[in-house]
Length: 621
Image (cartoon, rainbow, N blue to C red; front, side, top):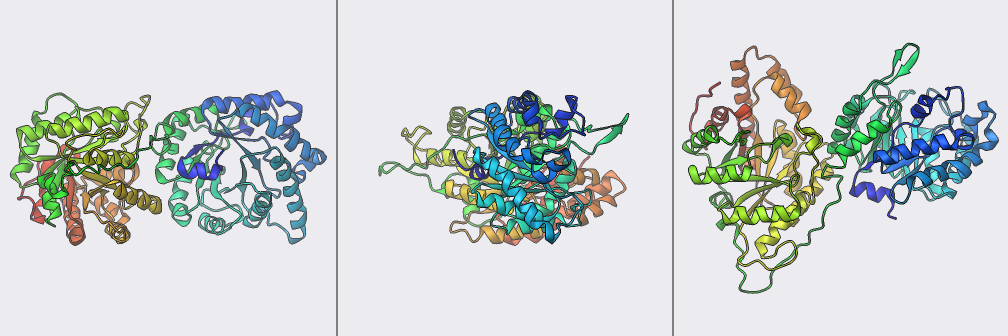
């Protein structure tokens, strides 16, 4: 079996939820040693493990959080430390895990959360860790999870002990609502220190705070580490209900944040206090349908050697391709297909864009996982009825690889040449959360599929003659929290055959420039079109900043939109901001894709009017 750290780098893993919460719910009082139950009530522990496995966890943790001799001493159980860990805990977890689920050894601190590790106690603490982790290692665990630590020195001591035994180490710390440990160390400082520690393979945050608090902390810590990051938040903060501390966060709320964590670049998600198999079950359904988690079909690059195969040059693929290849600025407007079969209103908007001199119309493919008229049918209708070139967004969510290839061949045969290849939003973000995503491949794999079609091969390696001449576009996210991962994926898209890129809506110009500085170092550069979204109001700005993955609205823009006192004022300021962004980035991009917010195409045209790519238009409500 591959090292669990390597698996996390390739595919995010779902960890289990709380053990203590489940034990308490089964009637065991808190004055008992929960770790000792591995010996005295193994059926209870086995049942909880099985429930997490059945819920869809990829990794379950042993019931050994406090099973070191220092923490067991107050219960009179110090001499049973080895028996709990070696003879019971791992074996119970292994039996429940079976062949497909990994087992991690849970190891907690030896000192209190608010305590500084005294120099005189270091040897005793190290001995306790060595005894516990040694017993766990002897039973063949896949990972050591050092969790709920507050003292950096103690955490590094435990990591050093585990690494000496040859085990992969996840070092996880606990934060309060201020983003600090109980002894006042910031999340940023903890992350930096653990990232520089050779004994630590992965870094994490667990317990202490709920999903929202972890989300806030991640925005500051993820850019500070290149190691896999794992989060296991509590189910919110506990509330006193009739004398019992109850966690009230619903599985739905927990799942929404689990999805956000994966989108941010986290490589492992689980739950701590208050989370149950119900939380993990719902999270598993949502997370495992996401492209970044689902195992993709491998697509090999292929090339025809026969001299008779004519590969279409980029500049001959479409009018848009010819203009971009010539270094001319291009403009496009994004128009979402209607929810109805009636495309009259959509075509009227497209005609206004064509009359204004816009080069192309972007047609999203089920944005926010919404069900609309087929984007391919919308694109073909636009081309036939108006004559302007569409850029068809094509996502991997809804069709298997055979169906996607058929669509690509059929679309090209019908006259569509410009395709923007995207992975697509998972169904959970839309109005149909129980629908499953397919995601046979992601945007990188599908880009390679299209490149192979352009070279005269189908997905099975069978010859296609003549080959297609699809102009391949891909998405880019300059404001990704994990920029290194975004850049790595961007370069892989280029290597797979991408010919141009369109960014997420840009509000932070400096972030775009930093992104361009990096991508322009690649041996093969492709033109980048900047996405532009004219804001309508402060509420719209907040929505873009908080709810749209990959979009960051700087504080100064939020402040400016907050000052708008009317709908008209909001539109005016939004247009001004968008025009200013275009003016600033124009020297470094190949053109612009301007969205029509709330379907108002006149606002998009008003933005473009100042760029020389569209005539003046008065925005209508």
